[in-house]
Length: 101
Image (cartoon, rainbow, N blue to C red; front, top):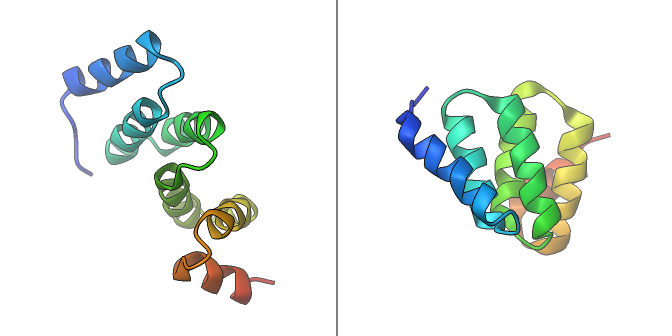
C-alpha cells in the first residue's frame, strides 16, 4: 500500500465539497482512497465521478481494477460494458467480455 499524506486526502475532499460537479475531483479522491487501501470508499466515490461525467474513462478503469481484485464479476461486467462502449478499442474490456460466460 502507498499511503498519501492526510492533508492531500483532506484537500481532495474539500475540493469536491466546493464543487460537487467536478468529476475529476471525485476521481482523484477515489484514486487517493484506493492507494490508501480503502477500496469500498474509493468505489463509492468513483461511481459518483462516473455519474457526473459518464464519458470519463479513468474512473471506469480504476473501478475495473477494484472489482477484479475483489472478485465482483457482475460489477466488473457492467464496468467493462460501459468502458467498451466509450473505448471500443479497449482490449482489456473486449477480451474480458468475450471470455466471460
